[in-house]
Structures are given as structure tokens and as C-alpha cells.
Image 1 (cartoon, each protein chain N blue to C red):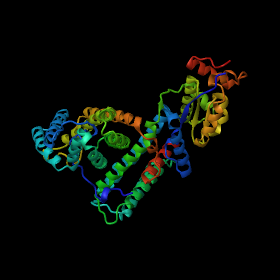
Image 2 (image 1 turned 180 degrees about the vertical axis):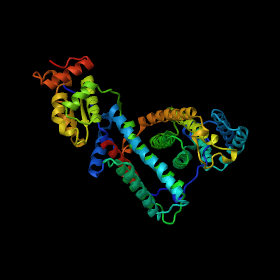
Image 3 (image 1 turned 135 degrees about the vertical axis):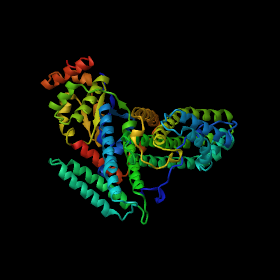
Image 4 (image 1 turned 90 degrees about the vertical axis):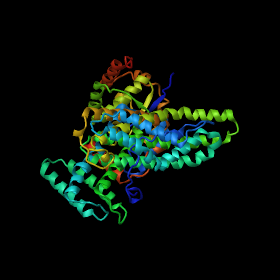
Length: 280
Length: 283
């Protein structure tokens, strides 16, 4: 009887981006350090992560260049010190007022963005050495350089971990959203990529994530229909141990015998996609 | 974390191609170029590079003269260039100068990284005083970052190689083999680094020179306008540099230490970008 092999751990972008709490950061870091050679990222996770970082960085940089710089110029500011907080506070207050006037919708996004930038600019202004006077250009350029460096550091896991090019199949995506109950389209793409790889290679994979909103609560459906295991980084080794005792993914699916309607739909889709028989 | 080094912004002197990649290649025992020869070589390299930059200016002749006269002066006052020539001498005579090489190389690389960091500040300043696309800033700053990653990789790898070289100093065959192995991996990186640097200079020069009214304005702070440039040439230079950055990044990732991939602390800048990613992914 052929036993299943582990083909790798597909990691979600939330594992690769620093987590807000120390304990979560620690578990992700430990996981990657111990299993880096077995980790994989799908093209959908890679593109999503890199795109998100690029857009986030660009929003902050554009705000610094297109609004803060003209404001400082209009005020005739020649030097910036760590005691100029009130001037910057005025800028953000004016911007908030502009946003209120221009965006009459209920969306709070422009305000959330502005609050994030305000927090960052305030912290950097207060970090200037006491008594130091620098030109506004030097101050703003230093902010941009620092952000460029940070963005680069955050990108590194996405470009370093082995990446698998998979174009997630549309009908599987629809099934993932409808029957797998994964309502977020990006997450559905990541999961479909992992499932496709699993049946293509006929090796088990584990999708590693901390997503308690869209992915982990749907584990019963993901197992039942797609034969996909998801896990938080802390429990991956436990699932891996169990999976190596199972047969290969194709054998496993063939041996289910009595299929639900959703399993038949999934099986037929995979058979069509990979030209492999997985339903008995 | 202080925002500016020593509290004072440091202005770049190295808007010219200095070819600092040379000290990475080891030779067991070979004659080396002296300082004057290297200087002449660098001037030539810069003039050749200048020739590849489309210029719509009427002071091209003066610019060439400026290059010929000012590059030697700049390099004469550039401690990093002087050190690179010295290290090159050690690298070319590894069997006799190994201790000097390893004594100096790490400090040199630290200073090289500082100089790239200064260049990144300068480019950020160019960007905020321009109407150039954000891809100009992104691509240039990414190129400095991947070059700094390579320096870290280089330091990490030669720390591993150092002991083997010292232990086998008396065994010429083994020593030669170690040098050969070193040069084999390093040459792939140097080739990519050099190509990336050249693309970077071409892009900066194209923007700076075509926005200068005379040779006196070259490399000085000024407003940079897209209207002084040909957008298709600008985009071509940016795309070209992006390709080089991606190639270097891919090569770096093959030797990147996994423990360096994750930030152990979340500072204010990281917090800002992460908050932003959260806002964008929620909406």
C-alpha cells in the first residue's frame, strides 16, 4: 500500500508578514526557521503579498510628497526640529477637514490611512535629536528612504521562499467560494492553488495560515470536499505526522467510495483539469 | 532609532561609477594595477557609460571635459575608492596578503553600505523635488537595497571561507582550489551587480543631466521635470533597471539566510506599512 508523502507547506501571506502580537510573530518565525526548506508559496500568495506591500508603501510616499511637502513649502518652513509637532498637527487636521468635505460617503478608509501616516510622521519627528535642525527636504527624504528599506525587508520572504507557479482554475474557485464557504476571493485562489498542486504531485500539502476569519473556521468543508488540511504554524508537525500515515491524495480520494454531491463536483473538476482519475 | 546618520544628512559624492566590486575576486598571486591605472580605467568606464545616455543638452562637450577633469579629483578625495584599490591589491595577492584583506574587507563593506544608504537618501530627495513617476523612486531604491543584501551575503560567505583559506595557506593546491571556488560563486554576483550599477547610473544621469541648464547644475539639487525628458526613454531605463534588480534579487535569494528574512522588532515605519496593508486588505 503506497503511503502519502508530504509535498510541502503552502504558506499564507499572513505567515510571511510580521504579526501584530509578539506570540504570533514568534510562532511564524519559528515555523519558517524550522521548515524553510519545505515551505512553498503559490503565485497567488506571492503576487498578493508583493502587491499589497507596494500599494501600502506608495500610498504613504505619495502622501508625503504630494500633500505634506507642498504644505511645508507654503508655510515657508526652512528647518524642521523635533519641536515642530504643532505645525505637523495642523497639517493633519487640515487634511482631515479636506477628507470630510470631499468624501461624503460612510467609508472611513481615507481617515484610517491618514491616521496611520500621522502616527508615523509624528514618531519620526519626535525621534530627531534634540537641537538638530534639518531642511524639510532632508526630513521627508529620510522618511522615504526608511520606508523603502522597510518595504524591501518585508518583501524578502515573498521573493526568497520557493515559489510555485499555478493559475488557479475558475470552476474550482467558484466551488471553493460556494461550497468551501471561503468568501474571500484571494483566499479561495490560494487554497485552490494548494489543492491543485496536491493532486498534481499526488503528495499531501498543508496550507499554513493564521486566518481565523475566512479559512480556519471552514476546515470541515475543506477536508470533506477538497481533502485539504489547513493549520496554524504551531500544529503543522502534528498534522504532518497524521498525513504520512494516509495513502496518497489520489488513492485516498478514490477510496472514499460513497461521495457527496460536492465531492463529485470537485472530483470531476480535478479529473478534467489534471486528466487523472480520482473518483472510483 | 535615529532618522539620520550622526544626526546630519550626508550628501553623496558617488554619482559616478566607481567600480567598487573588484575586491571580491581572489588571485593567489598576480600582479595588480596601481592606483593611477585604476583611476584612468574608471574615468574611461564613466565616459563609455556617458556615451550610452541620450542627452538633449547643449553642453555635452563641457560635460565630457567635466568628467575627465572632475572624476580623478573626486576619486582622489574618496576614501572608499582608495580603500578598494588597496583591497584589490590584497585580493590579487591572496597568499601573501590574506590577513590584511580580511582585516580590512568587513570595514570596507560597512562603509560601502553606508555610501549606498546615502545614495538612497539622495534619490529620495530627487524624487520629492520632481514630477517623476513613483517607479523611478521604487526601482532605484530597490536597487540599493538588493546591493546591500549582496554585501551582507558576501560578508556571511567569506566568514565561512576565511578559516579554510588561512588553514591551507601552506598548501598551494588546496589554497588555489578555495580561491577558485570563491571566484566561481562571486563572479555570478559581480556580473549582476555591475550590470545593475551601470543601469542605475544611466537612469540617474539621464534624469539629472537633461534637467541641468549647464555643467554647473549637474549633480546639484534642483527641480526635476518629466517634460525635460523623453518618457519612452525614461520608462525604458526604469524597466531595464527593474530587470537587473529582479535578477540580482533572485540570485541573492539563493544564498539568503532564512533567519534574516523576518524582522524581530516592529518599529514605527514597519507598523505604518503593516497598518496600511491591513486597511487595504480589509476594503
